[in-house]
Amino acid sequence: AAQLKHSSPLVRAAAARAFLGHRNVERVLMDILKLTKDMKIESLRVIGDSKMHHLLGRLREESRGKDRDVDLHLALAMGKLGDVQVVDTLLSLLLQYPACREVLEHLPRLDAEVIHQLRDNIQALRREEIHFVMYQIKAMKNSSVLLDLLHLREDGAKTRRSRLSSFMR
Image (cartoon, rainbow, N blue to C red; front, top):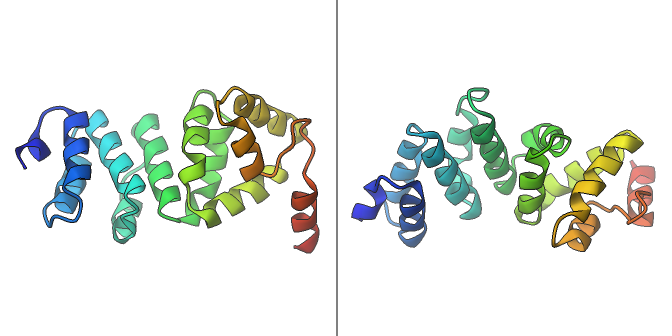
């Protein structure tokens, strides 16, 4: 358990993953959020990836606006935990380079309802914005998976599925 106090954020994150379920790990993860930027980011990754839903309320209390990278990983962790309140933030990040790449990398691991609402919001974007998102998606290794998740086609048009879902609203 000494690794949970290690000076390296990567070592702490690996230790937290290894000791998940242990009573002190959650406290350590929340304490890490008060340390350096790298420590905060690794803690948020572990919380989101481990689906620690019960920490969502405490994540909502975390201050935003001090650091873009921390805010990005806070939004991703909350999206993985199913907090639909971060959909607008994730959409905004999708329209910014290089943040969009990080959001796209984590997109398949976001909660299904968050993805659904994000997909609907993307469909309402201006054509140029959709093309920007698609350009970024096409640069990713798993572009076909990402296009499918967001109901986008290679040519930028809405898929039949997304046209039907917007018609049903």
